[in-house]
Amino acid sequence: MNLLLARASGPLFFIALLSCAELASAQDSARGRALYVANCARCHADPPGSGFIDPRVRTPDEIRGALNRVSPMGFLQSVITAQDERDLAAYFVESLGPPTNRPDYNVGDFWWDQKNGGSSINLRQFSGRNQLAGIWYTYDASGNPVWFLFNGGSWSGPSIYTAPLFRGRGSPFTAAEVDPSRYGLTEVGLVALVFSNRDNVDLTFTVSGQRTLAKMVRFAFPN
Image (cartoon, rainbow, N blue to C red):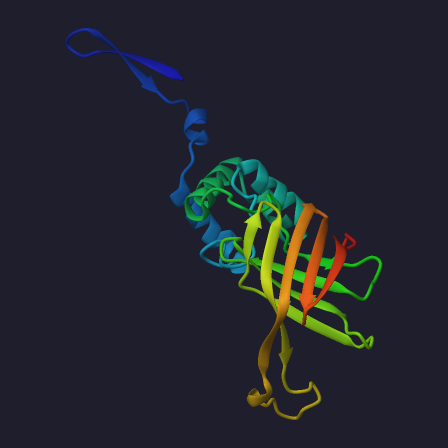
């Protein structure tokens, strides 16, 4: 901190002036909002949390880590400065609030069952990271491909998410025209996802009264 000595027709006053470095370390959420709209909203949606956004991004270090880790954002590494990271972090905390009853990592990804390679689940996070939506690709009792979907669930613990499970119906892909009357969703059971760590999740599905456990890992896409 720089100190300026001043005499104003009386006692000597000490006027504290913030140095440039100290001014630069302050966080400006309004500026962070402008940075988000200019650089992030196109992919992550506006406001943040209404699309895909990592729930960990509350600190400058986490923002820098995301830029370094997620290849589509790599071009921002040379664009976003340290001050930008502080301002973005301030905006995220202001708009999204502190982390709540969720893992401190983004679970939105493609997960698959190593023991049953054709069985997989595609997860996405929405609504300020409070909601998950997923599609489970698997096989029925006759070995035929089938898929289920879920959304509208909730976190019941730091790593446990439960939601109703649905099966869809609609027009065949070979149809010349889509018949809206054939579309519909039928609730067939429940799903519970238990994340043991960043790369492993246990899924318990109850479909038409039959309970199934699937252990899945995050799919490692080649760089």
